[in-house]
Amino acid sequence: MTALPMVTLPGGERVPALGQGTWRMGENRRRAAEEAAAVRLGIELGMTLIDTAEMYGSGGAEEMVAHAAEGVRDDLFIVSKVYPHNASRAGVVAACERSLKRVRTDRIDLYLLHWRGSIALSETIEGFERLKREGKIRYHGVSNFDRSDMAQWVALSGGEGVAADQVLYNLSHRGPEWDLLPWCRERGVAVMAYTPLGQGGMLRHQTLAEIARRRRATSAQIALAWLLRQAGTIVIPKAAHPEHVRENRGALDIALTEDDLEALDRTFPPPKDKGASGIL
Ligand SMILES: NC(=O)c1ccc[n+]([C@@H]2O[C@H](COP(=O)([O-])OP(=O)(O)OC[C@H]3O[C@@H](n4cnc5c(N)ncnc54)[C@H](OP(=O)(O)O)[C@@H]3O)[C@@H](O)[C@H]2O)c1
Image (tube, rainbow, N blue to C red; front, side):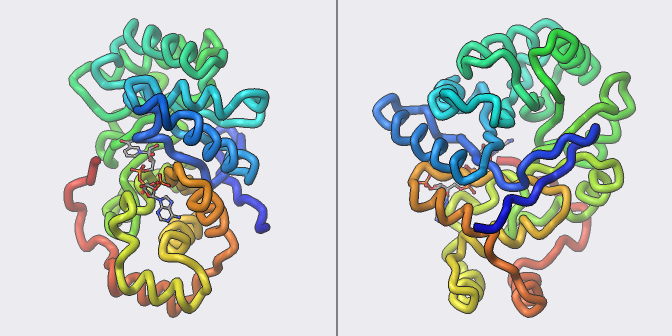
């Protein structure tokens, strides 16, 4: 099995470039054990970065992560997110404390503002800074921020410590390549590519199927390999089925050729202008 490539966060810590998402998990108690087993399998295969949020399953996904993490918490890098409406100076602290209880841990490794809401960014940063001082989070970050949001964030006191921006980024949504990726790369801010498989829909595309056939792989593996070849990008597919988990891990064994990349560029062209940043 190919070793997991790592992404270096500002400050030097290295985290796996391939992690696991948890949206739509923890919504149904009857499925929670199976979902936790799938995430645990991913952990055993080295995908130890787990992305969750207070929003997912109304806290159920964080509880599912607690099950998956039993006995191996210290090997994991857990990412969670605060709702924008909870992101006031005091609200962010209270929301984080609720998340800590659900995940049954004493710290969240990376805590993100889920998207930009109406609360002043400076308040959210103050809350994040307090959480850091208290050891309840290790790094802070944002999600669904475009380049201009990022510029505003880092201009605020404490905002310069931002570790990551989690955005919609896959073959069908290449908007971040226009100016966000170069901006993040220049500053060493990690980009987390969410919905890397287009929630499954993208995988039926003929070009992906053809390349997959050539590489003796699957369309999902090609879509992930395309994202994983980029430095500084963390990819977080969600998979509740164990065969999907194994397959996604296998994406690291695939080396796309120049021909493959050209074919993908023709079918899924890079952005020609800034466009609107996508959000799910
Ligand atoms: N920050 C944000 O605003 C935001 C927004 C969206 C997502 N996210 C994060 O990003 C994660 C991933 O995005 P996502 O859940 O939207 O979509 P995704 O990872 O692109 O796709 C998930 C879907 O693809 C299926 N799948 C997984 N591996 C597969 C494979 N090898 N072959 C075929 N199908 C496969 C899954 O099926 P099974 O589950 O049945 O295996 C599931 O239906 C989320 O879970 C969440 O953690 C963040």
